[in-house]
Length: 91
Image (tube, rainbow, N blue to C red; front, top):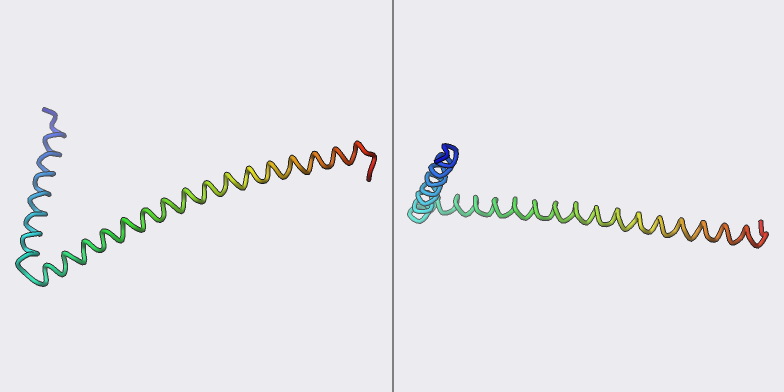
């Protein structure tokens, strides 16, 4: 067995047991329940901020692409109008 995989499994089990210990302490003591609830709320807030930032970055990228398309389409119309005016002999 790979040593890294074995170490990862041991760390995973220790973390799981530590979480069970913290959860059991949270059930017995009122201050622990409060701290546990605050920690979970903080983790949820961090996750929500992360998702909002990712969505905003993707929206920013999409709006840049849309602006590029609009600029390209607008420049093509300007070029066509200019060439059409030049063909008619207008100044």
